[in-house]
Picture 1 (cartoon, one colour):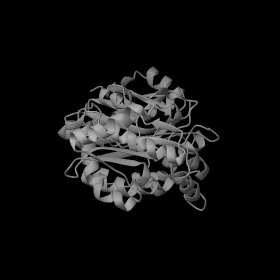
Picture 2 (cartoon, one colour; picture 1 turned 90 degrees about the vertical axis):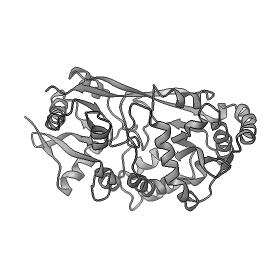
Picture 3 (cartoon, one colour; picture 1 turned 60 degrees about the vertical axis):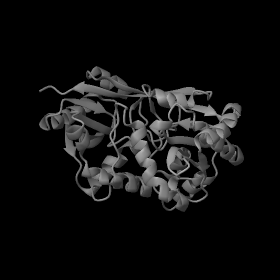
Picture 4 (cartoon, rainbow, N blue to C red; picture 1 turned 135 degrees about the vertical axis):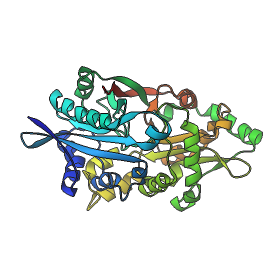
Length: 374
């Protein structure tokens, strides 16, 4: 018999976070989170997202053993302001037993029905900065710190339970040595002169801090028209600044400023921490922190975490300035591979940014949806 219980105590929340460690033990493609960071992100006293959202963290038990988990999430901005009656679900993992999956999702549906919501969609997080989607292609490629990994049977379970694809995402990469930089090297100085723009590079995290709030405001403007968009509050911006600053190599952040010093485009690249996180095994201490620090400064792979362009400058080619600066940095640092994080297939503007790169599509993922029956 399968029973579903909400995780409430510290012990239960730790069990919620650590369940995938047993599910993916010895899997060379799964990238574990740092357990403490994950627990903090689920703590309403720490993560300001809970000012605009509420969540229940559910564990599935079979014969007294934990066999699955899921977070049932309601984003109040989405439901009340945008009038999108969505029941979100994320952090979705289970053994290969469709009855476990069914029990977990039935409880998510019950919560949705209780709150007068109309449909479920997942796996998704609280906002656009969280992980998204179930992997549908690329199971033999290592994950990243900002994506979920899953077994192929997740998709099979969802489809058998009547869920349908809601949104599709692509993950691509390209090799730096196969990149022809001539086009953006020619365009960058022309664009700077034409629009009165200049590049902004950084050598320390301290230099970046005064720009962070403005950068996230631009992020909101850049992605506001996408179907998956939920804006990021000022409190969340401050939280993400604290959470990710230790992972950022300032040399991999590039801004484009106008003549008044306003940000018109930005790009955040992060070193790949995948292998370092696998070695850390969910813990910063005593040795995990050393693996992460080594990966931060000595790495041949970077992840394109965020990129944004002011709507007034979209389709004007200003990302050529970013790519020109980025190319200078990666060739100097010996970086050979750039991996792009999940991007909506419908995001044509983002596709245009990368169209001149020799992209290889190595992964696909999707969110799944189902109507909540009244």
